[in-house]
Amino acid sequence: MRRLIHYIYIIAFVLSVCIRANAQCTAENTAFSAGEELNYDLFFNWKFVWVSAGTATMSISGTKWEGKPAYKSHLITRTSSRLDRFFMMRDTMQSIVTEDMTPRYYKKGANEGGKYYVDEVWYTYPGGKTHLRQRYKDRDGTVTEKTYDNTKCLYDMMSMLLRARSFKVDNMKKGEKLRMPMADGHKVEDITLIYRGREDFKMKSTGITYKCVVFSFVEYPNGKEKEIITFYISDDENHIPVRLDLFLRFGVAKAYLSKSKGLRHECTSIVR
Image (cartoon, rainbow, N blue to C red; front, side, top):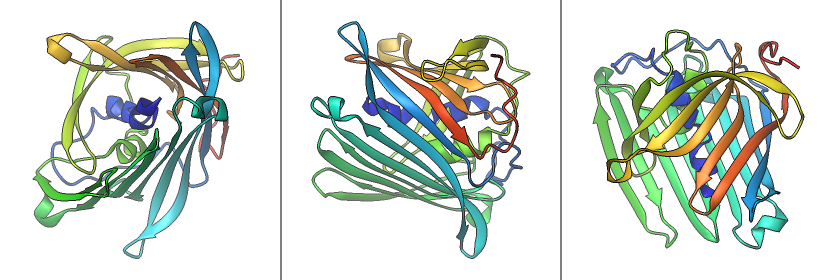
């Protein structure tokens, strides 16, 4: 379950083929507005039986950064009391981006199995480059700080999603692979995603069927492809994650959209 909080937003990278390789990291937002909230039910396969594992909530609100209007996004994940007996998770992520989608701040506070850590990233753009100040506090209270510079645009998992939700995937080919950089409090690393095509999928929580675009996040241990998570994104102007399948060391977990409010556009991806 701990991978859910880490990967629920990596789908953003799939849609980022339109990002230019320079640090003028601005873009038009066409997908969301302040007041959006998405709720998910989590399930885990335990000894061949699917059991309720908890909930997750993603929300977007208006705020200010250095006196200018901005968006603040939150992702909160909580395991159920039933699962807490085996592995308790209380995780919160937040991101601040300007109205033109420029990342300014990212934070993740994680309490996973009784172990707590905090990731933070601050973004500035001196001389047209991207400068990161990264801070990581581990479970023992040790704080590590570093900086990172690049001529490209850099993102954390949440700011990338907010920007990438406005992009189109019509020009992508089934099986196409994308590699993109992602930052957290102590590193910057590439991820690889594979476009799986378009399909219809029914939600376990609500019985609603959505038209979706589908992507997989994969890793390459020992040079062999290993699927980590499959994402199902609504094939409409909102581009919201409606289902996630997570392949974990100890089983399979799934997250299904259970409720949404404050969507900017009509949800035209619903087919029945």
